[in-house]
Length: 129
Image (cartoon, rainbow, N blue to C red; front, side):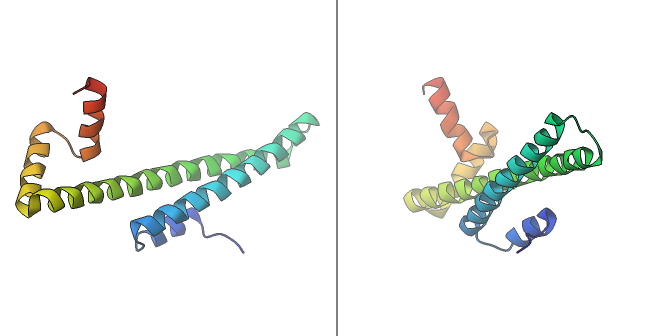
């Protein structure tokens, strides 16, 4: 079965819950890495024969496209995980402090220049605070 083009694949993920989208992205990324390795190996075999003809150039173009697709997959996965992280923080703050506490937390974060709560967590770990 042929895979969806990357643009259609990423578009389809927008309607999925984040956990399901993350799983799809990880699977696609793994498949993508295997295909990239196979094509890279084939290109290296052609190069080892000393043949840098049309097939070698075609595989090079395919590798370049796959590299761009890989970047898009990585960015989508990072965005998906960031959304999950934000939702987790929001749920935790609301569970402990309620909606009013959550609103105050968002104001405080804005005053600190933070857009991602986990960034604050990393600052604490780095600064030892």
